[in-house]
Amino acid sequence: MKRDDEVLGLDALGQAALVRAKQVSPLELLEAALARIERVNPALNAVVIRLDDVAREQARNVRLEAPLAGVPFLLKDLIAEAAGTRFTEASAFLRDFVSEEDSELVRRYRRAGLILAGKTNTPEMGVGPTTESRLHGPARNPWDPQRTAGGSSGGAAAAVAARLVPMAHGNDAGGSIRVPAACCGVFGMKPTRGRNPLGPRYGDLLGGLAAEHALTLSVRDSAALLDATAGPDAGDPYWAPPPARAWLAEVGAPPGKLRIAFSARPIMGGEPHAEARAAVEDAAKLAESLGHELAEDAPQLDGERFFLCFTGVLASGFTWGIEYWERRTGRSASAEHFEPFVWSLTSRGREFTAPQYLAMVEELQACSRVIGRFFERYDVWLTPTLGSPPVPLGTFRYEGGDPFAVRRRMAAFTPFTYIANATGQPAMSVPTWWTAEGLPLGTQWIGRFGEEATLYRLAAQLEQARPWAGRRPPICA
Image 1: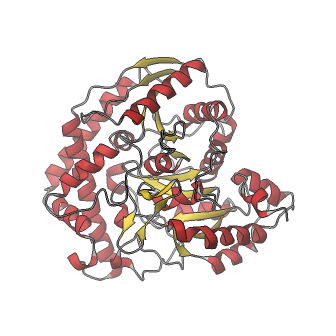
Image 2: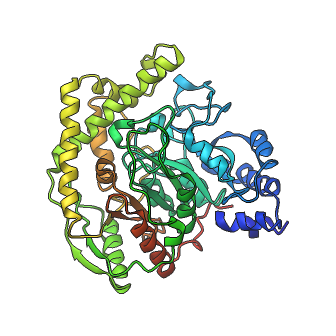
């Protein structure tokens, strides 16, 4: 085998190519990744469940013709399950739960040749834009370990940024792929609603807000993985429009002259951090230099109403989640099983009647129609991913009272990501900007419904013009 740092410095497609050429075996690749996790993870707390022996057995039986054969991969400890492995969603209520079956997405990961080496840190039940659970402790940002790695896929983003693995699973119901990607300086794509399966356990998860995919070092890895996993499962409630061709084929294809709107002003009001505004203005100039047509513009929405309805649907969904786990485990949940903020938020969710819940869903759908008309004029909408650079750990500590007040503080940190979950549109965070302090701060690019192809073409163009793979955080394998 070549030197570990030469091999593990490659992206996932690069590693898989070496496996197929038999220059490295899947087991050798896995052992090198496990050694990196052993050495670097104590400083990050990104990986919270080790699957060493299970992974070794999987590595011995990889199909070399699989598109991502032998590539070490990490599964987020939320939503997607792997049979026979511990699954906690970072909650004491599920501390000792073991999954009975693979989620459909995990089955597809296995067929793609990925080796599930472990599970990554997440906030309890995936609640919030920072990964600081009582059960597992905080995931630390490899650029500054006193700052958040983002949430809820914070462990995944930290692991990829620190080069423990080239890609890791994430999911996103309000920015949970894009926020940590921006915090840690990696690429994060939230695909179109219904693009990846949520079954067999889930269908209309959180009213259609949730989407599954990954955080990656390279754009092409994200596209190749989506090629391997996308497509409806039997009985899925949503079905995304099929692509014209493989997304990997879009990487490097000319995007044409795109009409791109850009805005740094949150729809919920207020002013973003100066670095967030600078990130968008820089990205707009970069896109213009690449031949695209830029206009400062944004859809007109009632931001306060949107926030209340979006947060209400989320609170209702998390309330459902606790009751779901009560049914599945046969146990009764109480406040002692959950962190105070999660329990308070779900208690608020119980206050909504069924008609009120449906009214909130209808309001989000009305906002989606406004956004849809906005995209009749534009191909892409550019915003900051975050409202500020990555915040210190503990910023969103809950001290009691109205949980919506904490959600409002969280929303000030992530005011731009919710919209694409409400509309179901694809959206990506691209690491185009680093602050004066040397912290990553991504820019968000939202595409039309079903048009990941446009975003992958644009992302590849941005990656070539402003490459980020050579940037290594202080904590890095």
